Length: 380
Image 1 (cartoon, one colour):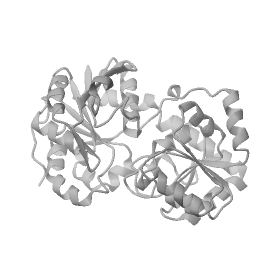
Image 2: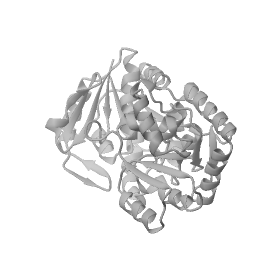
Image 3: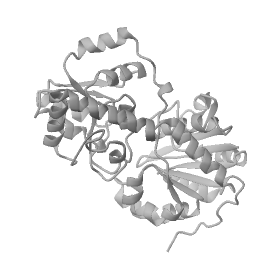
Image 4: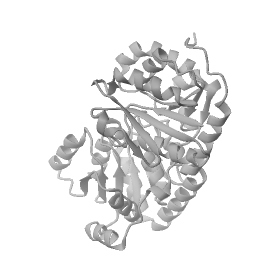
């Protein structure tokens, strides 16, 4: 069996949360003799079309971007070419260009879409896009939500719940480098006191501005790993308020990130909007056996981090609650260790890449050989 994944970006151009999920799915289903290809857009497709970890990362020329959506004329032809060779086409939502390609060039194969997130920020453009979106979602054969929480709280998914299943995201420990003692010692010397770690792209919905307000209410060190569009304003805020307990490290190699995950007291994840649909950084924390602090935003973050079992879940936009939760974990090492053990157990039970790969392989096989959905009409 051969599967074609289609998303706006992929390695080596970018390797964020959705890209890492695609990679983990591809590796996971390979154990079931399922081959995969990935088609994405690139400014330099001649350089970006490469073999990656046993599969091909194909590229179509990126013409322009508008409202975080890449557009490409070449994508239509590349999609037709690659989908002809596939048995299953696997889409990753949201990306409006993908919907247009699917409707304009129906692959004639069973189709799956992993629904990573509602469209939250672009409310005006969403009104214009909704008819196309519902036509697309109505026409695919299966939809995958990444958590029962998101399925229950998404108005869009509720409309298609009869063909939606839940497959949680998962990570493979083998993708994380073993950290040498020298690297650990270097970071331990730099951060000798207890510290909390944030890992992620610095976007508007990550709530890092709330975390910085929390830093004003505690002396506990906070280490921020990542870069992104909010980086300059966040650093400016930290400087203006003299936040000496906050350190911005930027993007780091995987070995250094793994060292910090191993050394931190816990992981703080202050995302405050539904754009944060799951939180792979929380899965990383659980994998490393670290207690977590996250916010209740009605998404998969509270599926990964369960209050009182794997960490603390607080209300969003509440810096005092974030600061108090960090203080509690530092003050009570026994409770922190217990929550960390609970986090590790939850990773093993729910969030391994092997479990995710097995679930997707079963879904693909259930669709393989079936006639693709003929409907392209949205539900009335």
